[in-house]
Length: 228
Image (cartoon, rainbow, N blue to C red; front, side, top):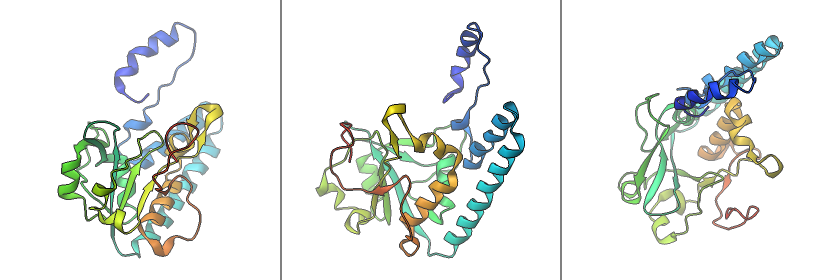
């Protein structure tokens, strides 16, 4: 469940005779909290030890990556995607996603204090980005469903654009399943996400392929969704 208000639907499902165990992965205030849900699933399906081993392995890899990133010069990242109309951007500012960015030894531009009562992002205007975010070293500019932003005259005002450090999140699309891996496995593999973020922010560590992110090219495509 993405929202606690959806709990009213549990009884409706139960009337169909379907056992229900709700999960609230998106509400976790820290990204490792999402991983720990795997232990509950392991308990329910009789694979508790395997689940515990999985969580331990992810924790160890996250710790290794954090140490690797900590040895690099601190950089800054703007995570904001255009909402497709008007003058609004969804800007990541807090909670689990912000923690992942910070652990890559990256300053989250326009970041705010964590607050589990709020979404990870806020809606800000282009003017607000121009006032406070033009000096960001890098920019994560869109996810798989976001609109490609093509006002290059405005983009030129951002350091990340001028220095070719603008990325987007293809997320490994699986059309047959109507899904993107980044929103499925990505929730419980923050080590994969962290590895990508470290490569984005720290050029010295770009020693392999990205899993979920790619440099932005401002080209249309991606199976008719309007993305490259």
